[in-house]
Structures are given as structure tokens and as C-alpha cells.
Length: 169
Image (tube, rainbow, N blue to C red; front, side, top):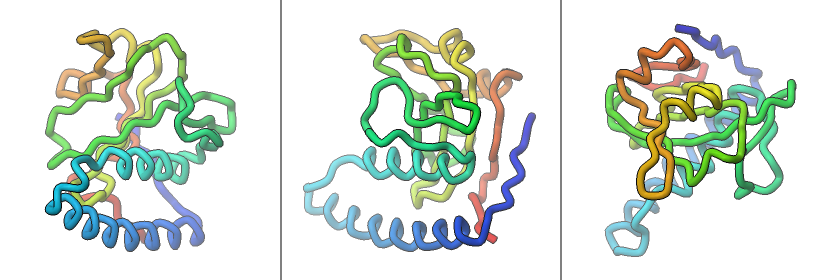
């Protein structure tokens, strides 16, 4: 298992602390809007936050178009990253990263696992060929299941994995 040592610059650490503050306020607002029946999904916040978090932690340059098809950003070597975020209760929970198609080739899937309070619990990286080989096709989409079998696959990298979440120092 590979582990990413995260030594963040002071500016990035400060941005993460400010982001956590605003996300906490947003979650309180979101809960109230859910109770009113106005909001029924958290997908937009988790997607945007996951992309931003990966861009900060892995030095990924996000595309200017936030809804571009195929990939979300590139690293300094020009490798393309598709970034997907999921909210889970715990790291042991099965989840999936879904794709409409796997025709648009990216180099890596960066899978972000967030707690319900949006703490980073896990960050995985999987190369495109492995995603394609392990994905199941159902109802017109592809689903890369993140379960124990996938986690045991040596081609999957756990860049960050911590039940208690990411601590900013």
C-alpha cells in the first residue's frame, strides 16, 4: 500500500481551514433547506469540494470548464485525472464511482471518500485500465465498485486512508 505524505504549505493549510469553516456553514444551511423540501441532494457540493481538494493535495490543475467530459484536471506531467467524490459513513462502506461512458480516456481516477461532515476519510488513485477492467456495466453506465475486493487489488493506491479524517496541521 502506498501512502502520500502530506506536507502542505502554510497558504494551502489556511485555505483548507477556511474551506472547512464555510462548508460547516453550508451544511447547516443545506440541512435547513432539506427540511423544507427544497434541496434533495448533496452531489454538487461533494463533487466541487472533491475536485478542489484533490487539486490542492495532488497539485492538479483543474480544467476551466467544470463540466468537461472525460477528465477534470491534469498534473504537472500532463496526466489526466477524473475526480469523483462520495460521502460514506465509514471507510469500510461499499460505494461506487459511476461513469456514463469509459470511452473518454483519463489516466487516473482519483476517488475521494468524505464523511457526512465532509472530512476527508480516504483518497484513492486507480489507473484507467484497472478502472475499465474492474467496472461493471449496468443500465447504460459503468460502475467501479469500491469494495474489499477492489481495495485488496495492488493496482489501487490508497493515497490517504484514515477513519478519523484529515487533520490540518
